[in-house]
Length: 183
Image 1 (cartoon, one colour):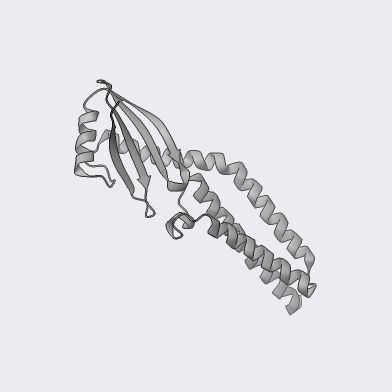
Image 2: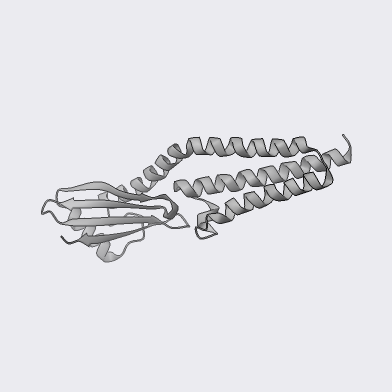
């Protein structure tokens, strides 16, 4: 294999791998799982999408300007489309995984607010301990995947309602607040 062919394969490899990784990161972000988009880019989802587009467009320009191996560029596009379809197909499972993870953190706090490893104020922990002593129901109210947030509606036997809000921060530590819902 000559050096020109090796260069083309290296260019194909890093551009395709970079685009796939950026799409995978967007997939993780949009389903509520840990991602670089959430951790480092503050939720600016357009950054990985724009990055993948810029990489593909610059590759297209390189291939068609220099009249290089267009088969590799076509392979690049096929791989990007195939990965996008696969990620779309898996998104329901990834979303359920994110919900289950957040749900486990919320239930651990409800079961034992005093020793749960979440960030919560003393007042929130005390209020949750008081609610936990009474018969209550806990119902999923909202799941916002891009903010890694889940809300539960807690109804106590005396018909008092509270909203438990869990937000998983960029470093993976859940932050919980409990808000009273006065009728």
